[in-house]
Image 1 (cartoon, helix red, strand yellow):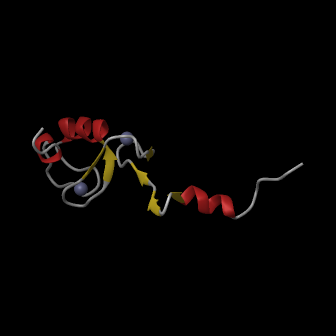
Image 2 (tube, protein in one colour):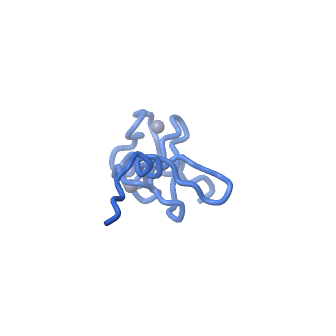
Length: 82
Ligand SMILES: [Zn+2]
Ligand SMILES: [Zn+2]
C-alpha cells in the first residue's frame, strides 16, 4: 500500500511546471475555477484579473463592469480589434 499524502501534493496544486517554466495557476474571477492553458482567457485592462473569455464577456454584457475592480468595461475593451 502506497500512501500519496504528503506536503508535496499541495505544492504541485499551486504551481504547474512544464518544460523550463513555471506559472501561477489562473483562476477565473467569474466562475472561480481554474483557467487552463488551452482555454481562451481575457485579463481586465485595469486590474489584470484573469477570466475565461466567454465568462467575462457574458458578465460585461450584463453588468458592464469588471467583477474585481468594478471599473466600467465594454465588450470592445476586452476584445480589441475583434
Ligand atoms: Zn470562468
Ligand atoms: Zn478589473
